[in-house]
Length: 217
Image (cartoon, rainbow, N blue to C red; front, side):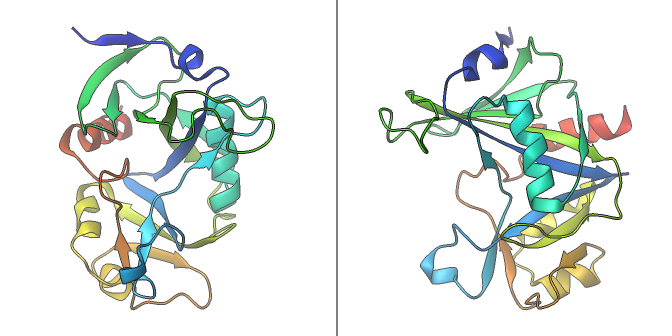
């Protein structure tokens, strides 16, 4: 049987992060970030995906909405997912869960907190785990969307072509294949998207099938 989780209760006064994937029809938007890239890939790759650490008094839903504003200048509507997958980032285990909350995320992750007694920033909670909630969303308007904060570029990709991002192609090659690149004026077209190992953004079959279900419902 699927586990029933109450995300609001699990994340109340606990460390968490949240992020969004924006949908435009059957295309999805992700960020390209300069931070978090290994030394061996610096200058040749950008990390795919982001996420915002909580601010005092926020819920994961508040945090996801703020992340969209910060990284893509977008006011968004969070789309309730028909099913949610739980990802234990320490073991790699993935399973489907039922969620009590009215706006379920696509993905709910957990990892052991390496600093359980030290808050990430003043005023934030401490705890044994860090949780992450990833939501699918629709922007209220597309004309404002552009790379924000420290984001180097945005990728607008057909949902059925998402795994092409892991093939090691350069941005200029992705653009020729039908993936729209929304970059800064000085975007480096020779760089490649890169996923962290065990990244919550790395495609896996049930998760992406879940996204397709959201886009056709």
